[in-house]
Length: 618
Image 1 (cartoon, rainbow, N blue to C red):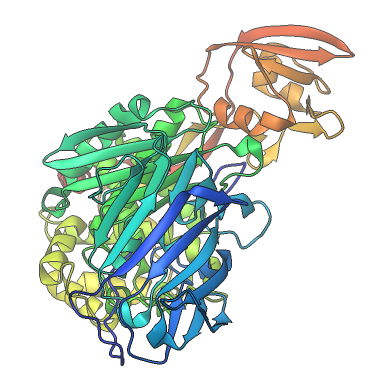
Image 2 (cartoon, helix red, strand yellow):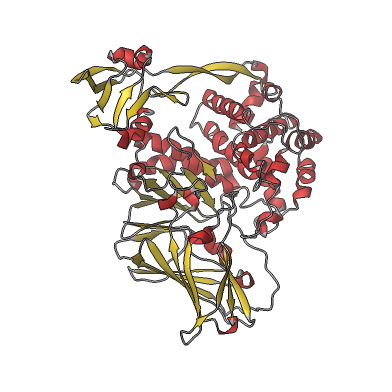
């Protein structure tokens, strides 16, 4: 999972579950049939019908997941299920008792013929509750327009039948098309049928229904599907495909043997933030053969493509870990009573590191840009608890105070991976790095063999060096902060300063504009006239900002203005219409971006250039 943070809002593994021994025995001929009716949407809810196999016990429990792997939070998807009922073959109602938010006990289960219930979506509620579900793991029901079917939000399971095949039948408007990595075996334009081997495989395969807008291309034998839903038609799949193809081709080249899947789907949902009733959690959630992405539709295309490069690459690299290399806690994940692994430093940290390293490795960013990104992670990690052992935080991530440190998996987690990479490079005189280690771990374990949490450090030590093992004990399992300067120096890199452009409407998190709530007008705050951008345009405090380059702005689309300004270039022409003392005026000039000096790193030791080249380009 990757969350994205903007000034306006905070922007998975799904793996197999352990077989259980119960009184219910499923045969190879049995299957669970699930029917979704997307044609009949009532009060923004969809009807689900579940037909189970034959049951030989008197009571059985139907579960909707409390949590799914990769999200690291208990979201209780069962809270979005309403009016669950159970029936026998004659249509008589059976007794159903709701046990908790996610579980329903059914009596006289031997007679059970079907279960029905309504599913409400999550996107509509994101602005109403603090405990909102991360949008890429959520669901959307917009009749006739879009259905984001993250299957764990629609379909549940019986523990006794988790290894039983599922058949999912979806009836839908003929005008909508379902983007997914699953294969539809029904030829109809208004019905899709998907068959999977077990519940976890169903959860691994989201579907996005919308008006067809997709492209396909091939990368080294892998078929890539890019599907886009843009409610206002602003972004198309075709418009972002060139950048996606460049990025995924580079990833494929960087990974080499890890890329084994034959089809990979990227499902991109663009949220209409201005509507006030749409997804607000921007980022992505990984699956073995697909990624769901939620981003703001208002973002300019070039900026969106740049964000997708970081977000989608992060999710794609999860095919290394934990989709290939993972612990028993993940292999046998319990959707309603999970035990978390100690190794988020690897699952999310190594993944995030690769998402940055491959870009400098393949020439998509410069060394300087890579060093600035890592410096930013050091700065962000410094705001977290740097003495909390990462293994402890990972294992206890679902409860406080550890859950409050979760976001450090993308900051310190990536830095752990970077320092390990540096140590392995130094120990091997540049011949090997962390990608080589992950390849060896993949050969040792792979998708079907999980490791014990407690054995991983021993295994890594045996595949690398005593220094690597010491690093893991000291800085990952222990409370000692990492001395980043010492590790950078191994590659001949020293601390430096660099200037980065900021946003003309913000200084850090503080805006230089405000809003008149009564008429929604945007007003420049005192002091704004001293900022180069406004000074160049001869704008003054208390000016009302009406238009920029012909586009009208007010409170309703202020976020669009702020996000859009991030793509402005220094010295490009700009026209601003303002109102001053009740009179409208046109201000013309060029963009002058604010710059701030930030910490970074730079190569300073030429004697270590060969080792540094092996690290960044090897």
